[in-house]
Picture 1: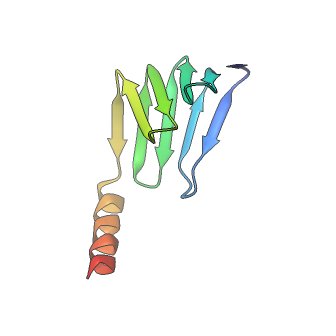
Picture 2: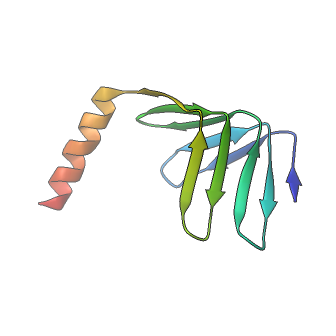
Length: 86
């Protein structure tokens, strides 16, 4: 299935993936981007030339990636995770 006119996927924790388009293969449960991709979350932003999501195996691969991160947000998240682990 060809998805065009922009694709936005929203995660349960506020993260988003946007792309100009994508193809979906229901037989393999694979989503492949068409065009440049942006991934955003509370801790930063990633852009890539291509994205493949394997829904069945819960895996995401990106090619030619650029990353910018909010180090303070990452540290706060790590402290929160540490408190929950103890």
